[in-house]
Image (spheres, one colour):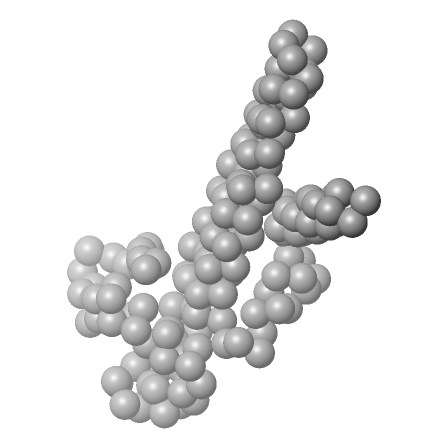
Amino acid sequence: MLKIDCEGMTSMSRKRFTDEQITEFLRQAKDGVPNKKLCEKYGFSVSTLRRWKELHDNVVRNQLEKMESTAAIVYLGIIIASLLLTIFSHKAAGVLFTLLMPGHCIYYIVRYRKVSGTFISSDNVFLSRSGRGANNVFYRLSWVFVFIILFSIVYAILT
């Protein structure tokens, strides 16, 4: 579960809601509860809800950027290690090491979908992953790699 750190609050101000409560409000908004009804029920303004959504969006965006940079390092490491194994050892060792790539691709796809789908209504999830401004190069690369591996396996079976 994601925590939202409400930065920028002065030492004089007191938080009325805990991070867990804010998370629950955002989850309810995702589930389709109208903003106005949610605000009236719990006693906060629509602008406060909007601010919480912006804070959450920044947290999710930072988490996705961190995931993407980690994926870049892992992919590069797997490629370099398999090339080095192929050059300095048996070619079969390099090929076997390359088989780690589909596992990491599937792991990355699952994590990316989980993080990007948090607090986003199901109607907008596809847009958040593929829309304008979506920085998801490794998400797409992972899908391409998974399809290439599946195609190769099917081709090997059929021939």
